[in-house]
Image (cartoon, helix red, strand yellow):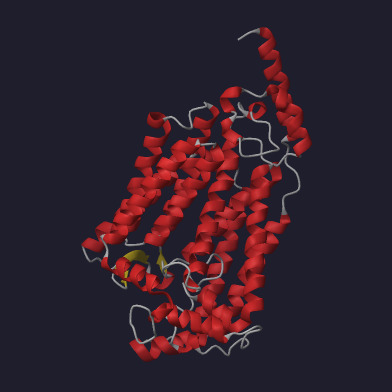
Length: 435
C-alpha cells in the first residue's frame, strides 16, 4: 500500500471515530414499543377471563380469571428486561458470537425434534405440531425464536464481511453457504415443526439483509423464484396447508359451517362487528369461544371487535411508525454489518405484522403467526423485544448525513454495492471499521 493511501486511510479512520461516537438514542423506538405492549396488556386483561372460562369448560382445567393477564404481565417484564439487556450489551459482542447463537438455536430445535419423536414430556404438542419445550411451572419455550435471533446475528456478520469484500453476489462464497444454513433452518421449522409462518419470517430476515447488502437483480430474482418453488413444495406436501390455500381461494364463498373456513370467517365477523369505534373493552363476543386462538394469532381480530376500525388504524400506524424508525436508524449507520443487523430486525418484525394482519382480514391464507408485542406468548415477545433493543442500541451510533457525505472521498469501489441502497451513507470510509 502506498504511503498516500495509508494517509488517506488514517484520515478516514479518524473521521470515523469522530462521527461514530455514542450519542442520544432514538427514544421514539421505546415509546412505540411501549404503546404496543400496553395495548396488548389491556386486551389481555379484557379477554383473559373469557379465555380461561372457555378452556375450563372445554378441557376441565382450572384457570383463574387473571391467569392470562398475569402471564402476559410476566412476559412483558421479561421482554423489557431482554430489551434493556440488548440495549447495553455491546453490539460487537452479539456479532462476534453470532455463529454460536445460531448453533445454539439449531441445537435447541434439534433437541425438541428428538424429544418429540421420543414422546418425552418436555416436548409440548399442540394441534398436531411440536413447537415448544414444556417447562412446567415456568411455562413453555419456543426454540424457533432462538433460531431467528441466532440467524439474525450470524447473517449480519457473515453478509457484512462479504459486502466489505465486494463478494455479496458470489455464488460459492456467499449465496451457497447462506442458502445451506437457511435450508437447515427450514428443515427444522417448516418440515419438522410444521410452522410455515415462522419459516417465512426466517426467510424475510435473510431477504431484507440481501436487499440492503446490494445483491444484484438477477441473483435476487433467482433467489426469489427458488424460494417460491420451495414454498410451493412445502404447501403441496402438507394437506393442512393445502386446505388453507383452497379455503383462501374460495374467497367469500365460505361459511362458518365449513370447518376449514371457520377460523377466518369468525375473524372477519369479529372485525366487522367492531364497526367504526368498537364494542368496548370487555364486551367481545368472539373471545367467548367462537374465534380460535383469540389471545394468540387472532388477537388482531379481537382488537378490531374491541376498538373498531379507528382503533385498528391507530394500532397499524404505531406499527408503521416503529418500522419507520428502524429504517431511519439503518439509513444513518456507517457500517454495513450494522445496517444488515437492523435490516434483519425490520424483515423479522415486518413479516410478523404483515402475515398476521393479512391473514386476519382474509387477503392471505392463515399462517398461525403471532402479532409482535400484542399476542399472548412469552418467547416471541421476549426475542422480538431483544431484537428491537439491538436497534435501539445502534441508534446511538447513527451519523448525520452531512458528515457521511464528507467521507465519500474515501469510498472504495469494492464496497459500493454494500450499502448501495442508502442515499446518505458513504461506504468505504467505514469499510475497515472493526466489529
